[in-house]
Image (cartoon, rainbow, N blue to C red):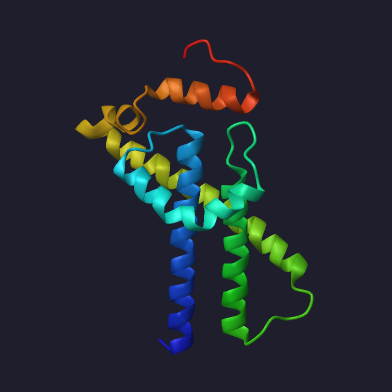
Length: 162
């Protein structure tokens, strides 16, 4: 592997991992997970340096952390620009529309990958003794209550089961 290929791989890997962590923070906030959990604490500490300044500028909306989504989009754009600069030696003219399409495609792919892996992990955990552990240990609530609060909060309704 040439040095340029190694740099592309390392930059792509580092950005992908950090984007995944920011998306995890968004999902944890959406599910109203317990942030005293060690995994949640790691996610908070890893994302706070970049997310705290954005939160001062971009407020949340109905329980959705819009700043996390904006940070994900910014990271995807920066990753694409860095990789393009390394691979081609500069940025071509008129990259804007192509960059927008790439960013939206990458975001959709990221969300689908995240859902796939979340479902796969839940299926694997359902085969073990840890199946009852998942929601009650992470959030301190039952799974149906989390779904009810999350979806009713997005629609602006109250949930009678909570």
